[in-house]
Length: 315
Image 1 (cartoon, one colour):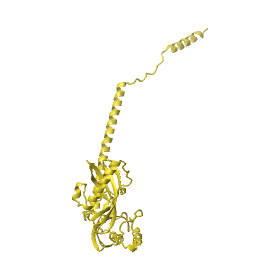
Image 2 (image 1 turned 60 degrees about the vertical axis):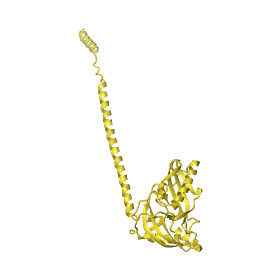
Image 3 (image 1 turned 135 degrees about the vertical axis):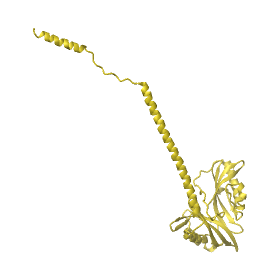
Image 4 (image 1 turned 45 degrees about the vertical axis):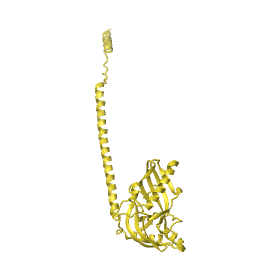
């Protein structure tokens, strides 16, 4: 019986232990006001960050625009500096002299030999027109006026004196070419042109290929009609007279006559308000039998019932 009090004490101890409340960890409560402050700070930080990024991007864009402008101006200055002289490369003068002598010297009984010789000068994609330069003639003299750049393609301009049917005629032609070290290649048929500034000038962009033809029949008809009128005016009028029809006016002032310009050789692309024309024509040196094929490109703007030439290119 002595063990009963001890057992009772243990029972009382266990009972009191079970009745003692448990310590539950205090839950973390979310402070809504503090969270709002944190979100606001994050948003302000993001706003400042993207603002700085935008400012830097605008600064870079402005800098790039200025650099592009500077590069264009430097290229123009380089083109002008190199134009109008072949002193840095006499090979060009000799090569062109040989080419022009072959091109403008025509003997009826040696046509095949002439074509064979010219093939060595021209790029592979150049084909000699069958209907031009079939009249006997010979080159009397060729004077280099200068070399200028047309969309990175060098072009040599020459003043020629050509004899045909006992008559001597003066004409100015441009000859586009490329050069790889000591190898030169003529990349287009010589074409009649205005005399360039011997100090040098920067050329415009050359023809753009692959234009989608315009399908509006009324516009195409009107544009072809205008093109014929314009070309007739261009070959017969002075540069001053052409100022009413075109920007940067040029005119051949009757140095050549328009021989042929068919509708089939006039292609119209662009839009109804800004058509683009590529036309291939045959001209005849005035008072001679010398014929020559050349291509022009006209960029037009619609003006009331007619058009105005905003850009004029030759090749």
